[in-house]
Length: 245
Image (cartoon, rainbow, N blue to C red; front, side, top):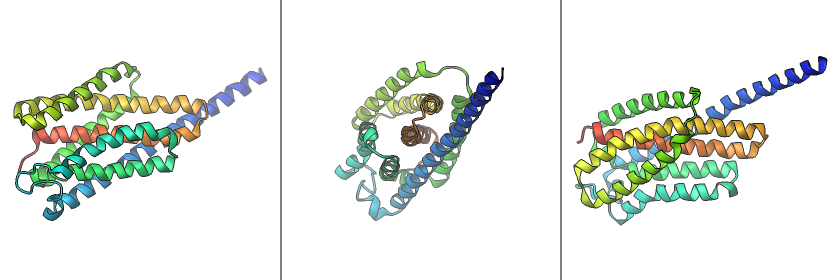
């Protein structure tokens, strides 16, 4: 009986440690994501409100990207794939530095919004996105329903959006852009809940195995996933509801 009580107490202590570790892990994920968001919008604002800097990437009148602008536009996508391929070879500090560099490049690619849209509508859409993101992430964290089945479907949706967006760069169809924006909001709303649950479940699996080194990098990867969900949801909502200059 005494041995049973000892084992039960040890199990309870271990569970409490994992719960505390999970909270710290999620705080690190959201904290890293928030710093990345701050970097992105600081860079975007600095470049977007300086006509000389913006002209390096886009035509000041039409906002059409030049060659360097197209490079900046697609650089974040390339960096995401590179990050996924290199994560196992990076230290946690290296992964964090890579993420912040990615956030800065993303800021360059988004700088045009400060010319295309009014400052008030950007702030308004950002607030709506933040509230929606917080609610969806909370659902993903607290729900008992397994959302893993959504993953493949949503990733296929993202690929479809990417292909349609590239095609529409050359077509310039407002109707296609409207449809892409609506689908984009729905897909990244689902991904916000899915990714949050996946971050939580990944932590629990690795925490039980005591893999502390991987958890440090997993927090950065989780921050990147949620960051991408937020940014994409924000941009699609801005396309739908933003007031243009």
